[in-house]
Image (tube, rainbow over all chains, first blue to last red):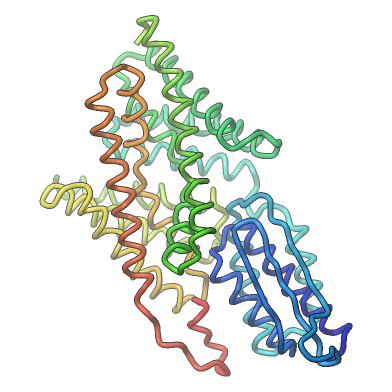
Length: 262
Length: 152
């Protein structure tokens, strides 16, 4: 294992780890994947430290003098999203590397593809999915068929806004507050227009696509694994998103009930 | 609840979970299992809701889902998070968040506190359920076989 090879191995491991972390994986998986890739490529001495928004890793090649580390990577992961299919892809890649089915050249090519790849589902499809999920949840939580249909319409429209806002640099709190506000506004409009609509059931169904499921589940898994800092970061993330929704919906309803509209 | 209601509940929780799979961009080949987990979590929840209460029902439902997700993850050779997230989603306390905010802004503080605490209790039920089952150790599979159960 010479210097150049060590470098490449560390690079591949770091890129795979960054992709995992960015796409919504827990810390244990990121560290395990990096370890497996490094070991499979023959790096014997390495150290890894991972938190939710960064990976720090160093390794030494066989040519390095005793105890010295000759390559270090620090990867910043500013934003975690939930592209869970990438977690699956990187997992397959790491399995292939471990089984010896994939050399460095191929691994680099596959990582290039993953980093460039477009969303797995077309935006229209995820909008439709958000609509269907909103409607179905509205019904499951006790709404009438009319409530479910309205929740679907509202889910479709505000989720479009959410996708647009999510691409900007707006803070998560504000993004979710704006979405909550818009969906509450639309619901109030429908409640006024159509008699017999249950405002609560429509809103409950429509907010479901905003619920921070991936952050919450990963936070719990990190805490269970003893990664308290990462777990805390993700838990705060989930609480911020939930508060954002509550603030948006709450403020809109406060204004309307203050004027006696609802 | 009659038989037809159960069928409708199964159908709608399946559809809702599949919708979420697309929102979280979960690959197509895992979708059926995710939908199945969503249905199981919802059915366990509504069956237990009346006899043992919402919080305990959420807890038991979470335990079922995490167990099944771990088993499926090994069988399907995919990361456990892919199956866990859609399975947990039907239990998420979206209604708790809404009612807390609603009663808070309409100045009904006792009800706001009641729903606020209920939301926190449900969240803790999910946390406990996940931690309990995740903590069960799995026997590490032999490394060479490429089975890799340690990376479920």
